[in-house]
View 1 (cartoon, rainbow, N blue to C red):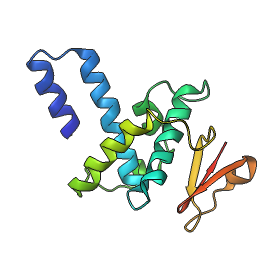
View 2: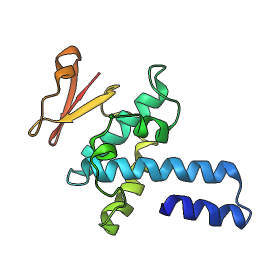
View 3: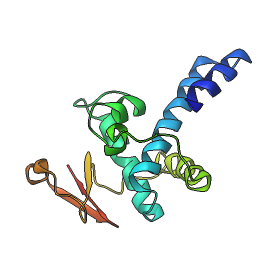
View 4: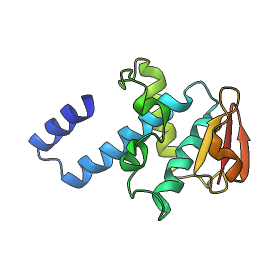
Length: 142
């Protein structure tokens, strides 16, 4: 909701559609970091961003950050029935910065396209993939 309002305002004041699209991708990426890993270290949050980036770069997934994140049932927060609006402003601003930093750093997940919170769940697909990293409370796989 907030993203749509901001996009409309930017467009009204003459911001280019390319700028607006980049901003939307940033917002989606930050939302994902916020909802999936805000309790993790900076490294853990960057790793979550790398998984999304790795999916965008893969031919097996959609081509944009938002499309990857909103692909049905890929990230738990997108279908949990709760509000997607970040409530902790400080954590969300941090997620924005970490998303930007992740795009400048080498991939710390060695190409991971999946992760899960190993203290909470063990998904049935986990056995079909190679574990490439354990960072904080998440297992990263490809």
